[in-house]
Image (cartoon, one colour):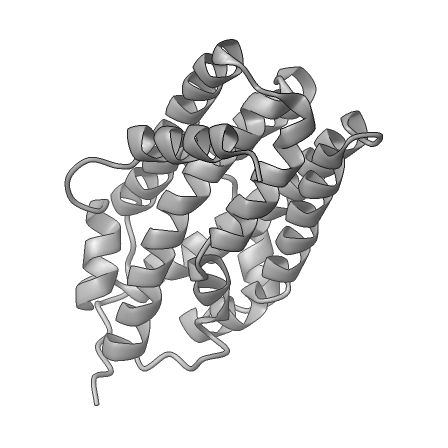
Amino acid sequence: MDQRITEQLHAIRSELAPNGDDPALVRALASGAAPLGVLAELAAQQQRIITSDRRSLLLLATRCADRPLGTWFATLADGESAALRTLPALAAACGPGPDEAAARPPLPGCQAYPAYLAWLALNGRPPAVVLALVANFTAWGGYCAVVAEGLRRHYGFSDEACAFFDFFARPADALELQAADALAPESPGDGDVATAREYGTLLQAYEQLFWETLAARPVTDPVTHRDH
């Protein structure tokens, strides 16, 4: 493994790590203060997000088809497919049926992230995209771990209902190691790191906007506690 690339990954991950507290909605879900309607909206928006992100990652894989980076992007796309299969159980635990969830309109603040990832798939420099995604996945995975714990503790969600968050909450160490190996032939330089910082800053901003949009969305169902 190239030590220089490993240091680049660690550095940009630390630099782009969220400062301060988790998003307000993540804290509310962790404490049981959020209504189930917010989770139903989250599941509906994620259905659109993951479908789009999978296609974006496959496009990146195609752009790098003759390079190790192509395999890395394809692996991420396979992960999105696996995550997509966990969403019906989450939606069912929140109340709405599949038809109702599919009928929910896209929320611009939630869909900004996949729109930007689609832009990166067309225009981004693949080595810089890898560096930015590794940093973003670390933050997203941390939020998912907190939410999964809150859903079990305060809402009585089963392992099946929490599987979506559990999937992304898994440690990203293996993914980062694979990224470092895939980046080795690319020899990313200072320009790639600077560009990754730009990409990652926007990805993190759109990540925050996702949570803020959901938190601001009016819901009519009462807060539901099912503590044991």
